[in-house]
Length: 199
Image (tube, rainbow, N blue to C red; front, side, top):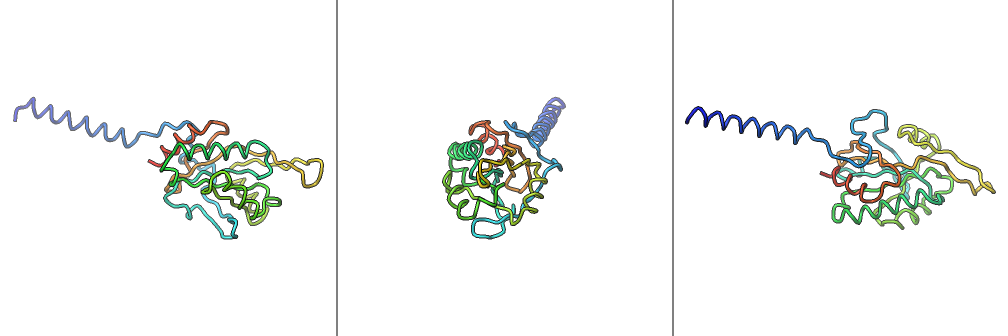
């Protein structure tokens, strides 16, 4: 084997290793905010489903989890966000089976299990609604995930609205928090980022 041939093979090997390392180290080109590795946000939750069963992130192992905080009496942001998420599921096609959308109520006083059972799956049968066991748990969870919410009085005691953070969070199938989804980005951006998270 000639010197030049050996050098050529050696250079090819180095180039191949370099490309492999770059490919392994490359980060997804997310459309939304990449918060991978951030310690500023919560890493789990413990909430009740509509049947009163405690659910945590571990219950959705091997799925990407999209977590949105809202309330069923919300006049605009919440339904539009859930519609956007449903449209993203359509764009994902078969991959949608690997995604779990979770709606966490900021209004457990009015959002009873019965109401959540009707409201959330109306957007997509796979979507689920969860609620905190008590106000202290809800306050701690919203603090962990930097969710702002405040009750705004209405014309009657039960006609209040809630100002709240409109973004969502995405965990990857390994349970790692990866993304903050900005409100109103459109289903295409969400579907794009979910595909990247699922890879």
